[in-house]
Length: 169
Image (cartoon, rainbow, N blue to C red; front, side, top):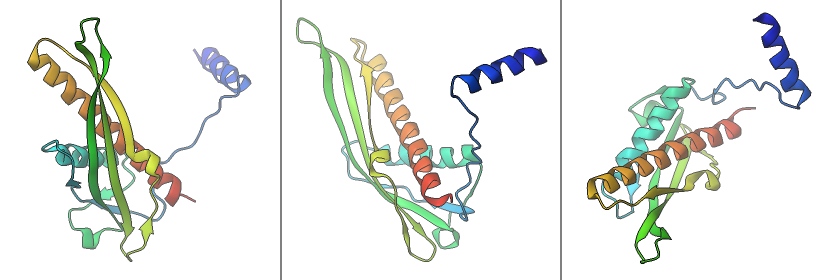
């Protein structure tokens, strides 16, 4: 077993792969408050889905403590849901939509307790996801909800990574 592990490590190193140390910390930031973003889209309740995904991502990484009170946080994440767009992506020969595309755009800001802003990569705040259409309306609704959950989780991870890259020396 030990020889197998050594062989895998040697093969990875020989192919140019390496181990990256990632402690997930955000530099000197120890506490974070995440405000529920304003919803400027036409999708009711998406602001709660995005806020929940952000909180889950910060908890999953485990490097900072989430606090409810923004005045007691080292960093406050706030902003808005800029848009949620939906369009048909694939069509059948009889002009029925087979697949839809959702594009979620956020406009989030991160501010330190002293009021200084921490820049977030704007590219980390926009993503597209596709979902399948269905003749069964309940199945289509579930497909759409899953696509929205996936978009929110993906963007939450990117926002955290953007903060990590900015705040970690």
